[in-house]
Amino acid sequence: MMDALPIPASRHRVEHVDTDASGVVHFSRYASLLETAALETLERRGTGLEVLEGQGLDLRVRELRIQYRAAARFQDWLRLEARLEHVGPASLKLGVSVYREGTASEPLLLAAGSLDMAVVNRESGEPTCIPPTLSAALKRSPSP
Image (cartoon, rainbow, N blue to C red; front, side, top):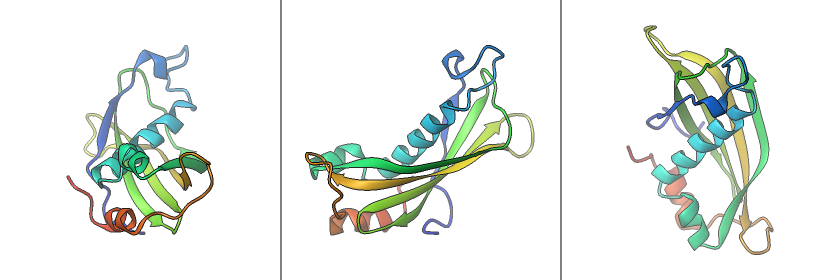
């Protein structure tokens, strides 16, 4: 584990578009929530998509894993917590937890997962090493 604690959480209000006919968040929407939290984590570290693009780099998801634990519903407030778990020579792995905020003393864990991403050359799509300056920024503690 790289991060001892997750960076400050992102929040998301469940919208109608996120749900199925019964008002429950459709399972496919969690992938988008994980990606949003992961990209915000990179942004807070100063290594967001614009920075990567400026270096001629892009990200490709190699593997997505999600464990579902409980359902979110229309108009729930969700807290998305992401952690950088690994920085490789040409890859990143981020873990994300999705919680429901509410009246309970502790938020309820709804889903947990990970995104394993390859760093690629933006033009060719070929895997490429993360430049040392970006690698160092990724390994530093995140900005609040």
